[in-house]
Image (cartoon, rainbow, N blue to C red; front, side):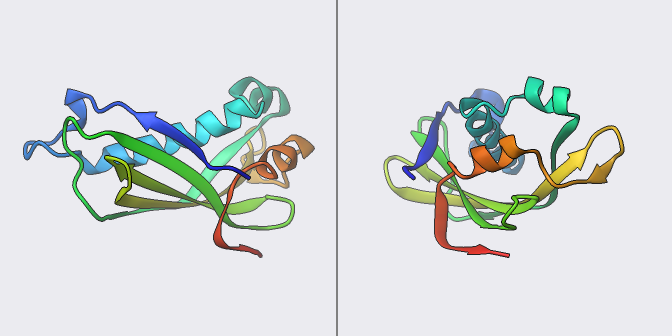
Length: 144
């Protein structure tokens, strides 16, 4: 699978008093990228609402490598790094780069799917498998 990425626009409100990116913005960008991927392949909020399920996160961690400042050109990508075969549990990693190829941060999340009516973990519907099969796989991808 080819890379899936998005260009990010830095807003004034994204900056901290030191004029570099606030830590929490990296997490917002990760959520944005994941939702963009799901939407692009048809796993929209409307579909999840109709089927009464949604994603949940167990862990979200960011390793900061290089600061991002106003004026930097920023890109975020995503890749699934491990998963159960039915994609009921999964890990996704984002690499955030600036100005071409400078790795600025690596964001990792572990998640699953929840039945929103019962508030319990669930095996996802076929649509999830169809969409996650299209997600790029990270180096060292492993089935769990």
